[in-house]
Amino acid sequence: MTEPPPRTRINQQDRSRISPYKDYLIKRWNDGVRNAQQVHRELLELGYTGSDQPIVRYFAQFRTKKNARKFKHVDPETTTPVKAPPKRPPTASQVAHWITFKQDQRLDWQQKYLLQLCQADQEIQLAYDLITEFTTLLRERAGDRLDVWLQKAEEQGIAELKRFAASLKKDYDAVKAGLTLIWSQGPVEGHVHRLKLLKRQSYGRASFEILRKRVLQCG
Image 1: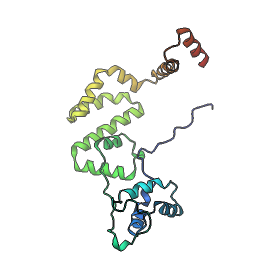
Image 2: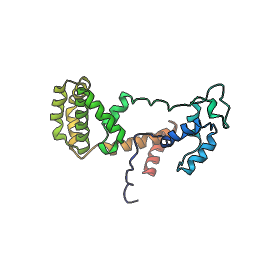
Image 3: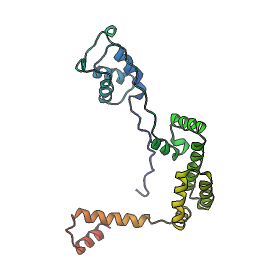
Image 4: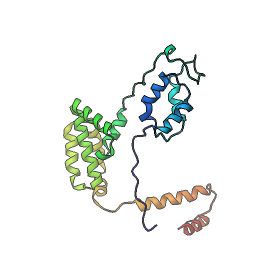
């Protein structure tokens, strides 16, 4: 290849393949169907492309010790209907991670959740604005706006961002250069990684001369 392949976008949210079919799974369970393989065959006709294991695991939460081994049809009138388990709210670290995304990288429900949080709490809104501004600054390599952002972070009074701004100031020249200049030590770090890899492959037994020959040959 004359150039690196295009960078593929990775979905940040690992959504289960059976998510669109969960209502159907609950309906079939309440109909008395306990055979995951049978339901899997039904889902294949509806467009499902995964294996039967996610269905088996999903049904497992509805099984009790009494009927744990019943995989055939049961009488729906003699069983208690089940409901979809409640969804767990996202953690603080997950929400913080979403904020660093571009808006077009977030799922619709993630964007809606962040909007609700910002409307409910002014401090979250301030943090959202500051983090979004800083990530944009990083992507656009706009080092000329760093001083303005540092001043905003100190004036807003959010403790975590104030500490972050203070840590940037300790290495201000390097941070400013990284956000302004087009050069970096990336190639050097790549060569260092290659040297360490070759050395580890020899389990520490290779002499300098052997390592030198391997580096020159691999280069």
